Length: 458
Ligand SMILES: *[C@@H]1O[C@H](CO)[C@@H](O)[C@H](O)[C@H]1NC(C)=O
Ligand SMILES: *[C@@H]1O[C@H](CO)[C@@H](O)[C@H](O)[C@H]1NC(C)=O
Ligand SMILES: *[C@@H]1O[C@H](CO)[C@@H](O)[C@H](O)[C@H]1NC(C)=O
Ligand SMILES: *[C@@H]1O[C@H](CO)[C@@H](O)[C@H](O)[C@H]1NC(C)=O
Ligand SMILES: *[C@@H]1O[C@H](CO)[C@@H](O)[C@H](O)[C@H]1NC(C)=O
Ligand SMILES: *[C@@H]1O[C@H](CO)[C@@H](O)[C@H](O)[C@H]1NC(C)=O
Ligand SMILES: *[C@@H]1O[C@H](CO)[C@@H](O)[C@H](O)[C@H]1NC(C)=O
Ligand SMILES: *[C@@H]1O[C@H](CO)[C@@H](O)[C@H](O)[C@H]1NC(C)=O
Image (tube, rainbow, N blue to C red; front, side, top):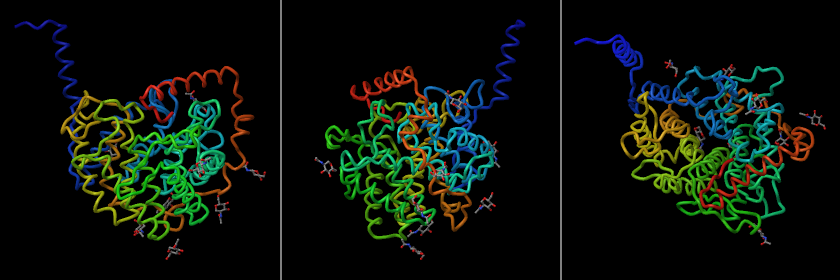
C-alpha cells in the first residue's frame, strides 16, 4: 500500500495529537487530597479556557462573553478557595490581579465601566469573594494605593448599606443601584442576602457588634416580607416589586439564594457562640437547602435543570451553593452530619460528569447521569470545581478572624464618602448616549423577565 505525502502528514499529525494531548479523564478518590486537587487542577484548566484576561485585547478579571461581570466574581471566589485548600499558588497572581483590576479606582467594586449596569447583587458577590481573601489570609495587596482586602469589603458593605431603603416595603435593598435600570423597583433576595452575609462575616471577623446588628436587621426584614419562610424546611424566594409593597413575591427558588442566606446564618451562629436563636434559624435553612436542591443525594438546580432552561447565570449557581454548604458545616459543626453525605455524593456525580469535550474532562450540568450530558460552560466548570473541593474543608483551618490568623488591614469608614448621588455626579460622567444604551439593555432584561424566563442577575 502506498501512502501519499499528504496522507502521511495527516496521519502523523493525528498520531502526534494523540500522543501529546492525551485525553485525561477525571478520576476522583473522595478520600484523597492529592486526588481531589488533581481533579480540580484539570477543572481549573477548563475555567481558564474562558478567561479573557490572558487573551489579546481581553480585560484582566473578566471572562469572555457572554459571561457577566458578577460571574467572574463568583468564579474567582471558588478559585481563591482552591488556592487555600490545595495550597497551590498556580493561579494566585491571576486571582490577585483580577480582584485589584475589578475593584475599580475607589477599591469598592464599582469600576466605572460596569456601574452603568451594576446591581447590588453584582457588587455583593464580588464582596463575598474578597471577604474570602480576608478570611483565607490571601496575599495582601502590595499594589500602590490599594487598601487591605478587609477595607475593600468594608467599603462594599458601607456602600450597599447606604442604599437601604425604608421608603418601600419597610426596608431592604433594591436590586438595581441606578434609577434608569429596569429592576430598580425590584427588591431581590440575592442583593439583601449578600448584604446580610457580608455583615455577618465582618461581624465574626472583626468582633464589631455593629455588623451583627445590621445582619440581624437585614435577615429579619427578609423574613418580614416573606422572602424567607422559616419552617423545618425553610424556603428562600427570589424577591418582589415595590409596586405592591413587596407582596407580589416571585416564588422561584435558586440554590444560590438559599446558599447565600444559609452561609450568612452559619456565620451568625458562629459569631454568637452558637446562640440558640441562630441555631434554630440555621437548622431550618439547612433543612430547606438539603431538601429542595438534592435528589438521591445529588445536587441539582431545581428550578431550571430538568427543563434544560438554565441560563448562563443559573448554570453557575451550584458553585456558590457548594461553597456555602461547606462553610456552614465548618462554622456550625452540628450540621456536618446532614451536609457531608450530600456533598460527597454530589462531588462523585460531578466528577463523572466531567468526562466530556475534546480534553476528556469538560464538565456537564447534570451530576445524576453518571457521565457527561453534553452541556459545557463556565458555570458548569465552576460548579464542579466547588463541589469537588468542598471535600477538603475539614482538612484546612476554618476561616480566620482578625484575632486568629487574619492579617488584612481594615477601614470601617471605607466607602462612606461615596454615596450613590455623588457616584452619579462625579465618577460616572454619564452621557445621554450611555443612558439610552443602559435603558435599552435593561428593557431587554425586563422583556425576558416578563416573558417568563427569569434572568435574575445582571
Ligand atoms: C498546582 O496546579 C497546577 C496547575 O493546575 C498543576 O500543574 C500542579 O501540578 C499543581 N501543583 C501541585 C503541587 O499539586
Ligand atoms: C473597563 O475599564 C478598565 C479600566 O478601568 C479597562 O482595563 C477595561 O478594558 C474596561 N473593560 C471593558 C469591558 O471595557
Ligand atoms: C409594607 O410592607 C412592610 C413590610 O412587610 C410593612 O411593614 C408595611 O406595613 C407595609 N405597608 C403597607 C402600606 O401595607
Ligand atoms: C463568645 O465567646 C467569647 C469567648 O468565650 C466571648 O469573648 C464573646 O463575648 C462571646 N460572644 C458572644 C456574642 O456571646
Ligand atoms: C465556630 O467555628 C469554629 C471553626 O470551625 C468551630 O471550631 C466552633 O466550634 C464553631 N462554634 C460553634 C458554636 O459551633
Ligand atoms: C498570613 O499572611 C502573612 C503575610 O503573608 C503571614 O506572615 C502569616 O503567617 C499568615 N498567617 C497564616 C495564619 O497563615
Ligand atoms: C464598628 O463598625 C461600625 C460600622 O462600620 C463603625 O461605625 C464603628 O466605628 C466600628 N467600631 C469599631 C470599634 O471599630
Ligand atoms: C472621607 O471624608 C472625610 C471627611 O469628610 C475625610 O477626612 C476622609 O479622608 C475621606 N476619606 C476618603 C477615603 O476619601
